Length: 617
Ligand code: ADP
Ligand code: ZN
Image (cartoon, rainbow, N blue to C red; front, side, top):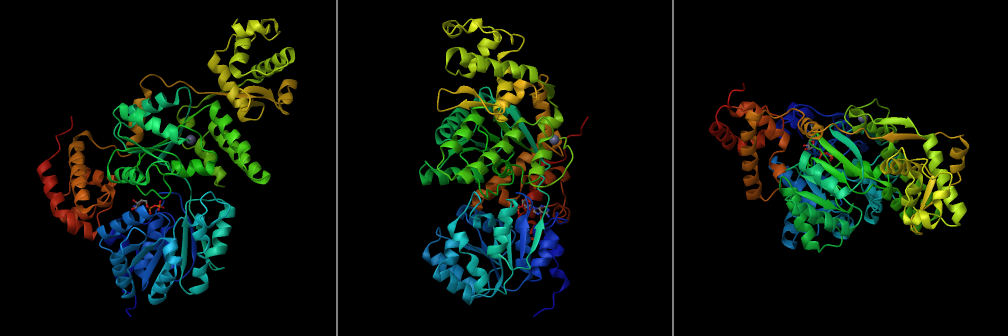
């Protein structure tokens, strides 16, 4: 055995193989710990760089590293990416035919693989266990480890059985990785999968390149269309909607407006779904419109925006879904349209659900936290991070930091609204929905107002100084805070709650958040500033486009996603630096030895053909 020649240091591997100048955050300490034989639980946000935490130890230790991953489509891409880097990797899952599977098993037994990706059911099957028994094992990496947790939202029974690894191979180090942070889940992962002396590595959950925005929902779909057209015209993105129906409709609507949008949900034929997933992964500017069934572990680094047409039911969900934007570290946006219907709908889903009471209470507490985030007038990032136990200061990259909303005391208006709800019911013996209550407040002589004689109420017309929209915003905020209820089982009528009285009596104050209107034209400029951290000089754009075209050809030829050849960030850097020789090219982040050898000559030719950029004025 060689005694660790200096060329095998983690830093050397990072530079030679990946072409990256330095480690990020906790990567190096994790790598050293696992390479040294220790167990580790690694919590890093999406895009934090978890893969290197097991890929480099896999190269540093003898034997094959077994990577357990729940998603077949991803395994294939990860293995393709490793091949592009010149590493010896393979996968075993149900997509392989028998002959290919046999070949992979032989390679593993012969010690010809550095990394072997396996679906959990494959690993747990008798044949899988036998295979592992015949291999020299470097380590186990368990990706998406939160799937082991019964309480988590992604529980997978096969993951529960992974405890067997600890029993059968106590001496082989294990590293469990996840982007889901909560404390209970952490405990469960450690207890089921890791040794007692496992180390916990938690990195910051901040995703500074993501700009968080919540807009008031009026007509969500046209707002979405405008957002994509103005700010992300040819970008890759994900749009989340709650129901399959609305996924289909929104995808069709966007496509009708010339956006390359595709639907994705569990109701689609498996082949169609697979095709849409491939196009999303392989192409540069597909917008996937999906239910939340889509996305776990999606590795595509250049997703420039994640848009929510319906509010997620928890901050965990919101964080995980928005986290799929901007894994490459370049600016990206998390955009959500939010309105009263979201509050009503989510509360209703919890109420009608068949879960036990304890679970319902937990779900409603999670929903309330999400609502508080949506209604917040202060920095959204500070709140998000606080939810995961991390203290921070205002970020300067969320809507509330960039355009602070007005925050005014609206206790008196709230009293007017609540007492109108009360009086309508008292005089007519029945409850009314928002539209009618607002008509009364604003002094509108509608048919219904006349029919019920509500123009005689003492509150008739006392809110004429506010627009209907103002009243709706206040109403939504009251509902979000449980100061007013919408009965979705019964014509969406409004009802007072136990806490409404506190407002009516004046013992509880109510604030009102008003979105400041963006000055005309601001949207577009802000978006451009947002989409390009190190803006690509206009003179470099043609070369960048040529590089993207070249990358598309290579990707098709090799049958791999474009980003596996080179991520956008690397192409951008190449376009800006215009290297003249292989050495200069190799110095660019993301160009390792293998990619220099495979693509260097053709890249240099392309750069030479592009010539010098036109001098900037
Ligand atoms: P995660 O699995 O945590 O979501 P990945 O391992 O897929 O994240 O890494 C996200 C992106 O960041 C990938 O494109 C990866 O190549 C890149 N990356 C990881 N570590 C580094 C680093 N030290 N320097 C530069 N880029 C990195
Ligand atoms: Zn902020």
